[in-house]
Length: 218
Image (cartoon, rainbow, N blue to C red; front, side, top):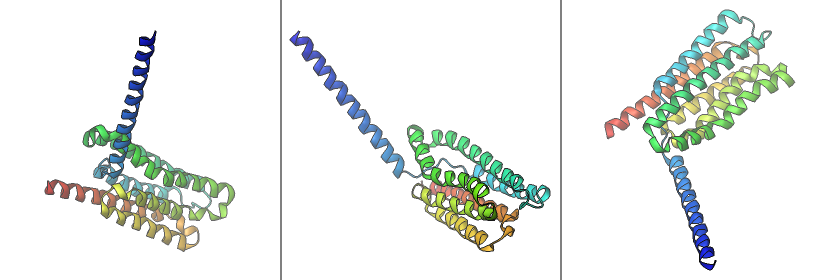
């Protein structure tokens, strides 16, 4: 009986040590993921989202002539544009990360999502709150969307190429300009089409340039 008790004690200690070691490995992997530059965003995919923004602006200009009185149609165009763009980026990020980051892919993707999720959630809630409780201020939606995009880019900059700060600054500038308009002119199709068309193209260019530079250096 004493030998059996000792055996189970040793086994229990071994399992405890194993769980501790696995926990330490997991912590190390998360730490490495948080300090490694993320290469899961593809330049071509980001450039395509810039095209989506311009196409959506054209659609709005053609079919939503009075966004103030057809706010649902206006929001529908841009929310669907955001959803499709996010789905495309997410799908490509998943496959690209597994190819480039290999064993760290899951941790890298999780870190990327965690960095951008708060601003994405704020961007999703802003139109609901304004339309429901302050419809007279709905013209602020484009500017606030761009500001939340700016914050999302800035929060992600620590594991993205350093020039990405320029994209965050661009979205902050355009968001403040939209808000400074102070009236329904902020709902113009180009108040969204130009900021996101140029901004996403800028992001794609930065990713392409830094990837090419990194390949040249290696």
